[in-house]
Amino acid sequence: ANMLKNMNLADIMTGLAASGKNAKDMGAYKFWQTQPVPKFGEEGAKVEDGPLKMQKVEDIDKEPQPLVAGFEWVTVDLMDDGEIKEVYELLNGHYVEDDEAMFRFNYIPEVLRWAMMAPGWQRKYHIGVRASQSRKLVAFISAIPVQIRVRDKTFTSSEVNFLCVHKKLRGKRLAPVLIKEVTRISNLDGVWQGLYTAGVVLPRPVSTCRYYHRALNWKKLHACGFSPLPAGSKPEYQVRKYALPETTATKGLREMQDKDVDAVVSLLRRYLARYDMAPEFAAEEARHWFLPKKDSKQVIWSYVVEDNGKITDFFSFFCVESSIIKNNDVLRVAYLFYYASEAGLSEPFDKPALKTRLNALINDALILAKRAKLDVFNALSLMDNALFLEQQKFGAGDGQLHYYLFNYRASPISGGVNAKNQL
Ligand code: MYA
Image (cartoon, rainbow, N blue to C red; front, side, top):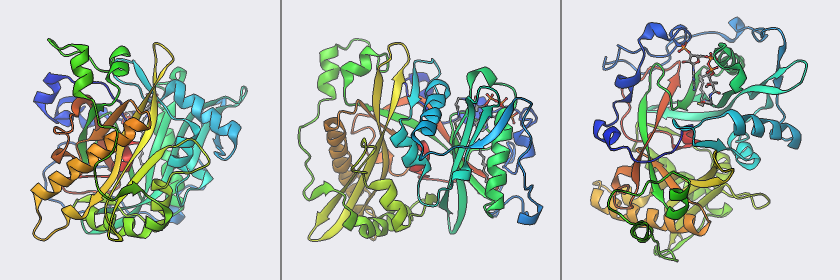
């Protein structure tokens, strides 16, 4: 979870050295220094990958830590339209903003259900805090189970997201209490590892990615302050620069359907094996994450290339709106999700062929996103994105996304991590 915003050349020049630049001394992390996470200052040491701390379910507290007087724990029923609206409103008013407070994520209920009700979800992981008197929802944290592979080891982990504390309750150490509660609930289910992303630097990222943005509707992006007019340029030139054809170019490209699930899972498994860290999708999970629900507002777009009955390529993107704080409008932001191509799987590996193919596929993705009336297309510096970002006119943003594992020590992760965690 992190935010947009555009081009800051100084940041691009200094590269991805975020953890060196912003990291506090370990001793300043009063909470995190007590948790089973790798510490700053131990980087680079060659370590055997594996858990940092072993525990038994019997030793885990059966009850949550008590909250300060006036607040109580609840679980939120996301099936209930009224309760999901409360989560929506908490996040809409208090969730992640960019550094200049121009934009704030606007997770509509369709996106929240997609993100938090993935296969294996349980209501007890939709953890809220209410004010006892007013019943107002003032804090939230959630998790879903995922299978995550780090090199040759695959384990279940709780993917934690939507940690949020009401602005009036900030700085009161409520976040650590929420994190300990989602840890306790996970542990009681025999889950000992966590996976999460944040825009802030914590001990200690397994990977740090930068956000890249590709304008689809430059005029709107400029009007709301997202895209500055480059010095010496004219608006017409920017509009022309980002113009796209009306129709896609890849032969055999079509929307993914239910019948494609097994082929997509197989292609993804083989393609993601190229990276040190990636999720493993069961068919049911792929169905959930990639197939659009026909009866509600579209959140996810997925396409395959079929060649003589064989699925050779796949790509997907999802949409999360961001509120434009100053004028009550929204930006509709596409996020590149997973993709895979047989072009990356040839033996020996043929990088130019993969580059050509990914550029063709992503250009089609841009066309389809524009047709879906999305305003900007985001992608991270992960997977094989370096092969197309520049050619497809993405520009580096000032947002970063740090990837973290809880209770797992891993030597440095190269290449792509989990695209799902940008949600
Ligand atoms: S990332 C999105 C987080 N949400 C936002 O940024 C929304 C806007 N901000 C807020 O709502 C609040 O500022 C939050 C902090 C709630 C973020 N992840 O209560 P405090 C540490 C982890 O006084 P507040 C997402 O959702 C901070 O370093 N820790 O602070 C993934 C300090 O610790 P330390 C964070 O500002 C979440 C302590 O909290 C974060 O009132 C993954 C201060 O607490 C952060 N984003 O509230 C959670 N921000 O003293 C971890 C601050 O040590 C999951 N802090 O520096 C771990 C895995 C658990 C499962 C394990 C299973 C086995």
